[in-house]
Image (cartoon, rainbow, N blue to C red; front, side, top):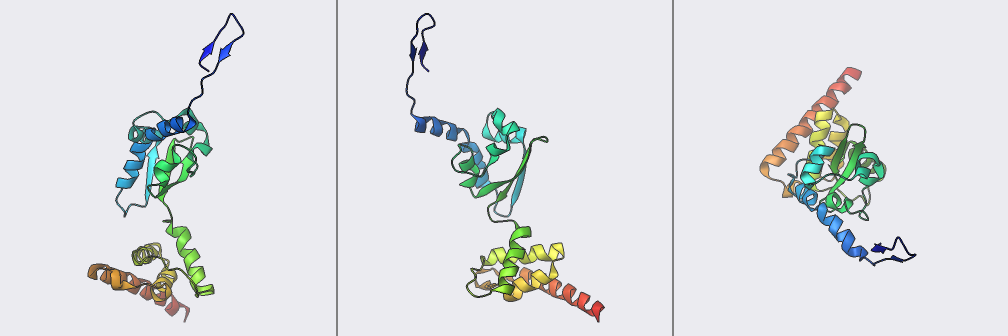
Length: 193
């Protein structure tokens, strides 16, 4: 609305270019996109308080972000969503009452991805698209740390790990992680006997 004639009956509207308004609001989240692009690749998760996130953006979060969970939706149709999604991140959890949001790299949730991949390997091994070698290396290391020894052995032996693209030290580390998983798995088998 551009003008209102309070004494008369006229209201004048001026058309605003919707694309221009959207682009202006997207620029507001450009600092956030840049931040996510600079996070080292080995970091898979980030947690922000709402105040910390506002500092990264360089301005206050809108009121809807503080009270409406849908503002944090991983969608490219909002002005804020592309700022993390195009950088390869997604909102994992939002804790409105605590004022905290956690982000995770897209596709990097080993707690979900490893069991799904193991199930595919064991139930229907033909036609599986294997993860990148470094992803499998990280998953095997994760399995060792979590005590998922069976899963670590399956990933190493049947997961399609191709070590040709890995460095010598990466090969040595994954071999060691596998050896620990195999040894611990066998230890439990000895107890059963």
